[in-house]
Amino acid sequence: MEEAPILSATRGNFRVVTLNRPQRLNSFNEAMHAALQAALDEAERDPQCRALLVTGAGRGFCAGQDLSDRNVSGGDRPDLGRTIGTFYNPLVKRIKSLPFPTVCAVNGVAAGAGANIALAFDIVLAARSANFIQAFAKIALIPDSGGTWFLPKLAGAARARGLAMLAEPLSAEKAESWGLIWKAVDDASLMSEAVKICAQLASGPTEALVSIRRALEDAETNTLDEQLELERKVQAGLGAADDYAEGVKAFMEKRAANFSARKAK
Ligand code: T3D
Image 1 (tube, rainbow, N blue to C red):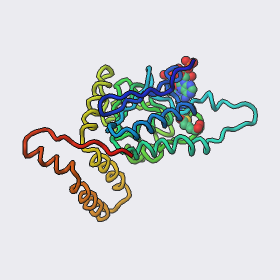
Image 2 (image 1 turned 180 degrees about the vertical axis):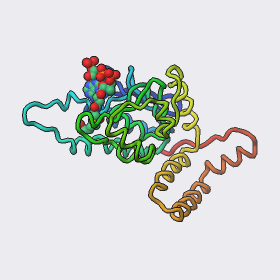
Image 3 (image 1 turned 135 degrees about the vertical axis):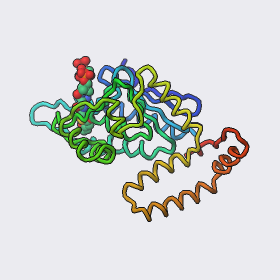
Image 4 (image 1 turned 90 degrees about the horizontal axis):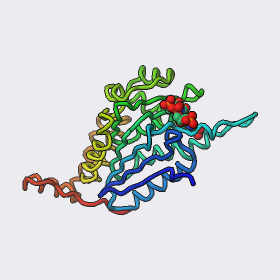
């Protein structure tokens, strides 16, 4: 029997989800997409879950689409518009809109959609030995799963063109120095660092953390005036919430804040 393509474990107040097709570098087939969505459903339904950590089993993080499902013969052609619309786009949008902070621990190569899905997380850590490959041009495609949006925004237009057109591996350290990811860390400490960050986020003020994600994204298209107004409105809402009262009280009492649990969906 084939192993479950996604492993999901509860760790206190957060979940660890592992892409688990290591023999194919955790590349996506439809079963893995469905299992990942189910794991996200479960995490969202659980009010105790206040952060998500995603990583890969084995030596790779994710090699994008499983190309053995695309190796068609004769005149047959796969409908990539359908698969992207059905699987990849909803996944990226979902990661970006999860109601709790997200961490990605890139344990090894992240290629194709695997690289861009990683970039959708709030905090991306990568093992120093990992690399990111916009492998698409090698098979005559463009970066998808948000690649053409993330790359120029994070790394600038010249680097985005180079990464996408040359499809060369980008080391974790360079990904950090180019601003694509939060940090490259020693391989041996990847998971402990990722767990530490995820635990910190899971004990944080969930609504404020998710509002930070949204506000920074809105800033991409807003004018300064619009963004100042957005900050005023969001701050008004957060200021009226229990977590702010608790944060201020904890500060005054010189103790750690005890932020409230996430509300069930
Ligand atoms: O199709 C749609 O729905 C549209 C959406 C597209 C999204 C996409 O992601 S398109 C891009 C697809 N991905 C790629 O093009 C990457 C393909 N993989 C590679 O280029 C290399 O495997 C890596 C650079 C990622 C790693 O190289 P290396 O030398 O470390 O490992 P390897 O030997 O190539 O791979 C190890 C095994 O995993 C190998 O199997 P084997 O020979 O041991 O039986 C290899 O075939 C398999 N594997 C790796 N990537 C994929 C894969 N099998 C199927 N699909 C893969 N994407």
